[in-house]
Amino acid sequence: MSHKTGEFELISRVKSLFAPIVPHNMQGIGDDCAVIYSGNQATVITTDMLCENVHFKLSMGGHAIGMRAVQVNLSDIAAMGAEPTAIFLSIAVPDKVSDEFITDFFAAIRDCGIPLLGGDTTRSAADFIVNITAIGTVPAANIKLRNGAKVGDTVFVTGELGAQSLSGYTADVVAQTKQGIWLGGRPEVNSMMDISDGIAGDITHILESSAVGADIDLGKIPIAAGASIEHALCGGEDFLLLFTCDPAMAKELKDDYFAAFAAPLYDLGVITPNIGGLRWLQNSTPAAITPQGFRHF
Ligand code: ADP
Ligand code: MG
Image (cartoon, rainbow, N blue to C red; front, side, top):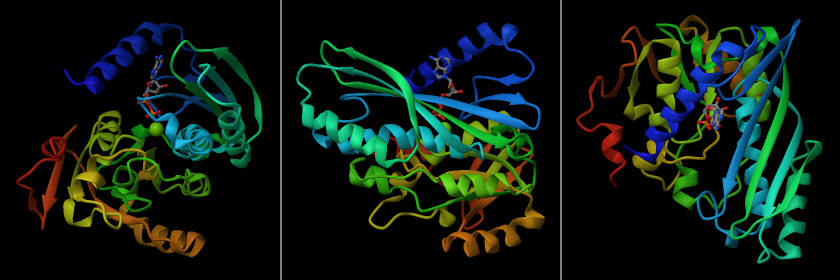
């Protein structure tokens, strides 16, 4: 059993345990953010923890680590079509961490421009650990969930994949906040999520939540300069948005997005009735190698 399988099983158990006490206006575990509906507005909330030597090395420096800790959360807010409103920050700090590191860390968090409204600070015996909770807001009508994909939808990604895993996760990456809010305002976008663990695994969350399948064309995967197809499919932390859209509106959406952001949307394939089934195609025929195979590289 892989580490990820264990994590998903645990989360699924926790979800069942709490389902009976989650009120109707709230939606908890299973999307990029939790949602609390209140009239025509929704509040979205997400939290992510980063641990030294698991998610980063201290040698990356305080600025890069602070930046990453905020952006992973802002990416989940963007994935809902929401606008970030505030963050909370908790840190566990070992003695080895310098004052300069902490200064750089907070400068990076300040640079992200979202008000920090509170948190917690504690000593740590060994590792530096950082947890951020981010809160966002979105008109209820604009919220994008993972479970809205419809058969026939065009599957899009908002940028080239694999740059982060190519760089060894050291390059600064910025969440697609404006793009997420913009896509939230487009009714033809039926489902959305951010790509945090690699598109090959992440897309299955939309397929399972929506009870659909997908045919994805390997030849259409946009690969960042210097990256390999393995980086593009299985590398994490690109913080791009993956979404599905009514095919009748796909061209208009693509043109409008280009006009708004001077950047293309990449069409990867189509949602199919094949429940949970993900097929990777090369020149319209099933690819000989599955992305799971790529994990061994
Ligand atoms: P993401 O990559 O979008 O941040 P995750 O894969 O980390 O999402 O988490 C998937 C879902 O499981 C989310 O809804 C998250 O809130 C929930 N989750 C993860 N860990 C826990 C936990 N320990 N307790 C409750 N919910 C959790
Ligand atoms: Mg996410």
